[in-house]
Image (cartoon, rainbow, N blue to C red):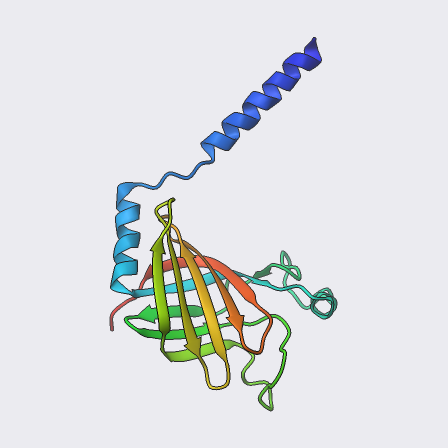
Length: 182
């Protein structure tokens, strides 16, 4: 009989914890995010990089080169300069890249980060049921093209995924904030 009551207690606590973990955003959070997206004037600073794990990538990253708390599929970026900025129709980025290249690399390895500066194309925004936004666009650097997919939530958390013409895909998680006007 004690087992039966313990099972009921565990089930009820599990159901309660699932219900209480549902994220409800305040009206002010939703309005702040909507304003950022509509104005197209924000930046994203990533705290984690999530590269596509391949056998070669696993071997390199397990060699002890990463800081504590990071692994082959989740690399801590706190303290590393990185950004993706959207200002009108322009895009600027400097995102550290961890992964495999599929073709051309400049001599000296100076193009290891994902960097682009210029105009976006095919910019699309859609509102999510959870009051967040999905944003997608295409961007080009000197020798690569990228498909960028961003998800923004009212708590100003972000997730973005980049698919490249010459690199394995990578995703980032971080924070979105209003871009300061200089």
